[in-house]
Image (cartoon, rainbow over all chains, first blue to last red; front, top):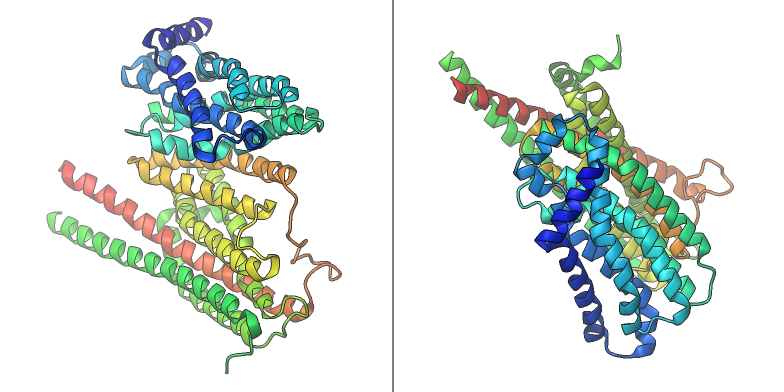
Length: 218
Length: 52
Length: 242
């Protein structure tokens, strides 16, 4: 399981795909917002929490189909399925690897990007905290969507349609946490709720993903 | 015949209009799909019986 | 004797074939009575004027939009646990009806919202929840059409329906957290103190019965279509093999 986890991370680094791609996408989304709404710093400060969360979420979405697709096509998944490793461990390890190569870098990149959007200084801690505990939910829920659509040719668009609605509660609590911090309210309650959601996703989604994967490998 | 709907006539009538339209569309779609499936299945079964 | 014997497609076809005409007539009658009663013979509300007549479409469609999803969840579970094809096909057949009901609830709500709240759309928790429900229906239906193998599609959509239900519920509560509402409380409560006035309550109940009967008729009709299509493709496979 740990070997699989390491292998996935190595592959993501070597192909240069997920890692740099998601970060560049995040940067571009954040850069586009002033182009779209104007460079008014006061306005940007108000919408910064939402933009940063939506940007991170979309950047995360971008690399989801890589979790299973390549291994499905070259038969690695069939080999893994016949190994003694339980399916839940496979999906869990792969989702965790996706988080390390996508969610974690996005979390680290969010603070400097927040500065570009004039995020109020009180909110930086909660921005990083909410992304740190919120992006695992994105990766694990996403891995479920990826497992469902792995057999569909050109399933990228379908994957987004299935996964984005599942992201709604995470996005609401995550962005609320940062907004509350930015406007001087207590962000702890929404952060705790989002983290609870994230823990639930980490615990439950590998089961659902393994279920879907078994159907697709039948 | 029509009751006096007052100043909200447009709202009430358009709400009823849209709903009836949507429901009619759904019913029509279900009926044509059903008829098509029934016809195709009948043809296929006939062909099968002929071929043994 | 148990209900499971109707899980056999042939039994289901013969029973539904007999029941369907009766249900269709009943649903037509209930809808006609309820909507005519609601539209022509109810008084105007002292505050809302004639717009209150929209309730006879808005509440039944919203009621069904949610309950059809729950019915899909139940049939998905039955398919997953007991592998009855009729169940999986019924879930597939119900989705387009559910999405239509969601649309009707959204449209009539928007039209009603304009004169009452001064806007067609506000990000009120209940409106937002229905928008979310709409997206869930879209994803579910898209997954059915994307997968060719019928049993795989049935399995994957039922998994999606189960996981989706959990997250739909979570979204419902998350949305409450995020914005304050404009909606009134329960219109349908059995408690006479809180539900809408009796002049509207009785025709409303008739309308709801009509909508439910319409849904049952449509879902039977559409399930029959799906069963026929399934048999058709089975015959075609056998035909091409010989």
